Image 1 (cartoon, rainbow, N blue to C red):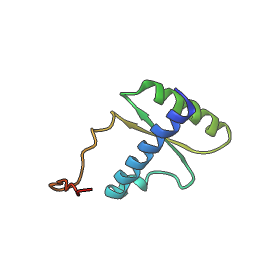
Image 2 (cartoon, rainbow, N blue to C red):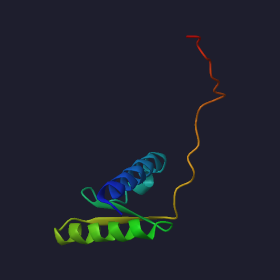
Image 3 (cartoon, helix red, strand yellow):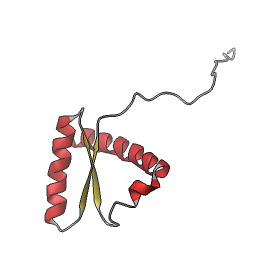
Length: 90
């Protein structure tokens, strides 16, 4: 996995986790203020391994680490309501 792929996957996961925290603020209260939050995905063992390696580096630097265990991501669906196309003549 390239660094770019690692970044993109973690960006997507962190965005989804942020949305989840907005809907479940009680979970956010359990995360220490300055903690590094890393997501471990059951369906992506390579990503999980890379994130665990990142966690070891952060922990060695004295930073708190919190793992979020998830099974995976649901397929994304559009939130558009009844879209239709209108072709404009040239």
